[in-house]
Every structure is written in C-alpha cells, then in structure tokens.
Length: 292
Image (tube, rainbow, N blue to C red; front, side, top):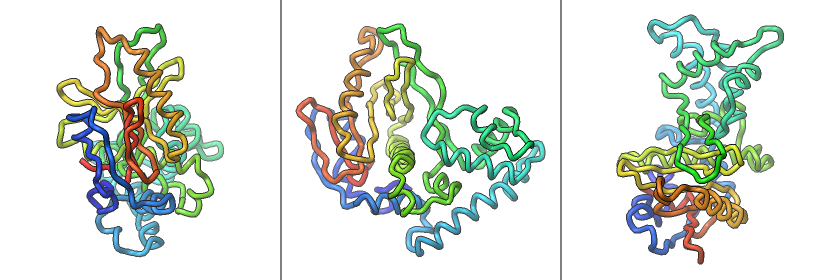
C-alpha cells in the first residue's frame, strides 16, 4: 500500500491534479514527522503489518526475505539451483544500494563470500528470480532528446517492491535511519517511487528516472501514455528545496524542445510538512500530503 492507502497521507495534493491542472497552486500539509517517516519506511506498506508492534513487523519482514531465498526461489520451475545464502547476500547488497544504479558486477562483488566469488551471470540470474517473485522492481531510465552532446545513461535504478524489504535486508530500524541520514535518504527515495508507481498506475503512467554523462539527473519521471510527463526531484530534507529546484531547471533547459515537449510540471517531493508552489512555478509537495 501507498501512504495514502494506509492512511498516512492527508491527500491534499493529487498526482492527477499535478498532471491535469499543472499551473494551479498547490496547498496542503503532512502530519508525518521525520521519525514517523523512518517508521513508515521500515514497516512498509504491508496491510498485515500496519497494526502490530514495530519490532514484530521487522522480524516478519526479515523472515520473509529468508523464506523467499530458501523456499520461494527453489520452487520456480525450470530454473537452476540457487544457493539461499548467496541470494541473501545479494539482497543485502541490494539493500545497501537501493535507489541507485549499482551495476551487476558491483552487486556480484559485494555478494561474494571469502574466496567464493559470485559471477555476474549468477547475480543476474538471482535478480531475475527475485523480480519474478515480486521482491524487486527496477526503475527504468528515460531517454529524451537533449540539446547537448552528453550521453543519456541507460542503467535502471534498483528498488525493492517496498522499501521495508531493503531496510530488512540490512537490518535497519528507525533509530539507525535517524543516525544515518544519507541511507535514510535512499530509502525515502524508494518510498516515494513506490507511491508514485501506485498513483500513476490508474492513469496508465510509468515511473522512470533520468541521468546523463554531465551529471544532470531527475529522480523520477512520471510519463503518461499520451506523452505528457512530470519531472520529480525527491529530497528527504525540505531544506534542500533550492538545490532540487536548480537541478530541475538545468535539466529542462537542456531538453531539445523541438523534439521533446517540456514537462507539464516540475515537482519536489520532500519529507517536510507543507505543500506550496514556489514563485518559479515548481511545486513542493510532502510525501505525507500526496495521493492519487
């Protein structure tokens, strides 16, 4: 479930309104504090885990990953034998690198144990199996036409189907996230991507990302079947709003407008409290105020 579905978002701003009335000013507020978001990340959107004690939820999530490696993957038909411990090492490597474009080779290296090196082919096979049982879901790249000669990167960003699985893979709890804000930011980005996917699905939308060789990047591109799209930057700290806005503007200025239409809106999704529209027209929306 998304935060709106679990009742954690006030729903003051909808993705549909951002797409259909993009010039209208937004307003609303989130009831979620940063500690609340840390708990939402590690508990996840699982219906059966919403009302039980957090520690019990964390145990169940770690057990789920263990059961996936030891029971679910061996049941896949027509697949080679898989080492459950190696699969768990790979999930830990994925958990550390969630919301990044980490390569297969890097994941294989990080999943190796002692002299037992995991090959790239083995890592690729395990990733495919984890996708088949709906544990992971990559975020594909977006390839617009740009004015510069910089190359658009094609690598997908790595995500679990829910950020709580990434946290469970590395045994992270809210206390750890609050003392490791860089990693918290990765998991927060994965949480936002999860919710954007949920909100975009009824509209036929796909959530992609953008990065080029010059370092310009956009955390999420929400693209609809008619070709209209939103550019979304994701920042846990609302204080990084200006940095995110500048990044969005640089990206849009580099588009070839004759071949790629501009975004219908630019949005910064934060872990802050208030939703509003900046003087430059960029919308700032707390994840705790966003809905479909």
